[in-house]
Image (cartoon, rainbow, N blue to C red):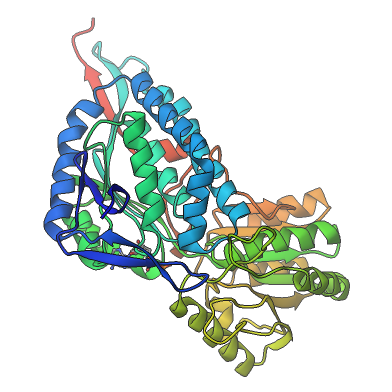
Length: 478
Ligand code: ADP
């Protein structure tokens, strides 16, 4: 077993006490690596190591922590191509997308290095009796992190960078589908000089046991999770015992509104960018396309032409727009969602389903006449399937857009400023892309409302997730 495939606990690379598990290449189904499968005892060891390291990590100056984050950022830059190739190998996404994921993930390391020195408290106006109030910002403590497979690097960087900037230490469980990127990223953190125990990586297959321990161990003060709403609910319930702090970035069901006054070309390009990134496997992918009646026919014509031009192929193939879906289970789920949608009255006007018998490639598919009663309406599709619903008035469009439990990303296309503002203010979502299909950035607070979760990642808000506010009251000050 090579160093790359071991767990990283307290600065040591360790074999898994439960043996190892296999990682496959979604493009071929071939096993490409074996990775340490940690035991519950090893998770506890990692928590202890993070707790030990917390004492000294929090006491470093903010500038010292920032310098280490920057050193890690530079290591990631130097290994950009290598990281991207590993992302493509284990997640299947096109290499161009993998490269942009590396840049995007790295941008969090740099941004939070810069923000680490701005975790300011406040001094408040004098109180009666000569008392002086003030506040300090202090790190929450040890943080448990659980991440999904769709952005194997960025989902880790987005949590770890602000946590480290704040002075927290971490135990990270990557998705079992994509641990190799996490291992490489962790190795680069070690090379950059992050002290032992500050980040610990526990790959494993028994997610429920690892998750339970991270939620209930008294030394883990916060959990940050990105994944499905179903698992988020379990984690939230488990975290109740220790009143643990939570950041939950859960499933979305993004509406994509196209109004009669939209720039048609921009709307179609925005949709292609939002819908087909990672073959439709992101939580902010456009999921329900709502098109005003006056622009419906030309929009669909242009969209079909554009969808038909997308190239499917292994992520390593230059020029591939869409790679395979992550797993056999994932493609079977998309097939069944489409079957159910057709049974419920949707009309397929483009798409040839699975390409090849045992493959994980699914051809870009267009379903029209989708109604809110159709079961696909309330599902996060996680595949290259566009569902379209026409509407007449602005009010109807907004009502349809809000007709879901989810509240993560939403999109609207209109060239009328007053309408764009009115609609954006009426959308029950944490984020609104206005004439834009790609919205995520290290500078901006990413996150959802309703069943899409709690908390924000990115921006100043992202640092606050890892800080407690302590109030000091100084008496006898005259
Ligand atoms: P997906 O279906 O997209 O894989 P999940 O929510 O199942 O989404 O997975 C996201 C992350 O949560 C992964 O790291 C996975 O291993 C982990 N996970 C899955 N089930 C649990 C659980 N019961 N407790 C804690 N983590 C879990």
